[in-house]
Length: 196
Image (cartoon, rainbow, N blue to C red; front, top):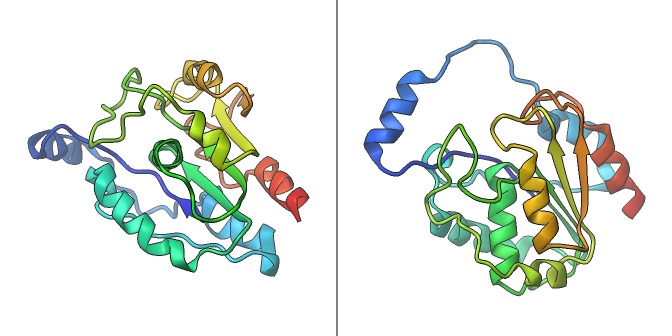
């Protein structure tokens, strides 16, 4: 199950200001989490990608409700992947709720830890509580990925997670084109395939 990223804003006015600044392009955005993931994992894996509600002005409670609607369809030994806001969503959810199925592995890609990143505020209820220990109880195989050249989620967020999640496998890449804006991510494919 893959949870995509999104954005949060303090209010509608801030959202509209940000929206006016978004760059429009007709270029196809090729991301590792789409066709590449499907192609490389092949028919051995079923990938569930819920389109989380209002991703461009996200609220944790709404995402939680929609995520939980998918739980009956998830089998044992699920692999969870979260990217950016989707990663902190999974971190928060797994730190506050006992997951009802066995998690084979969790991969959190460019997970913000708190509000100390430059591009946008982490609002909408996504703030983590101080005790994250339930994440490691829910998922014994926890992997986190950061990029040293990520301006959206600075690499020092990795150290904040390391202090709270000492058993997590935290990998820092020199460059993943900033905020993992890459068409391929062979490292995560290799890790997932080793699970089979």
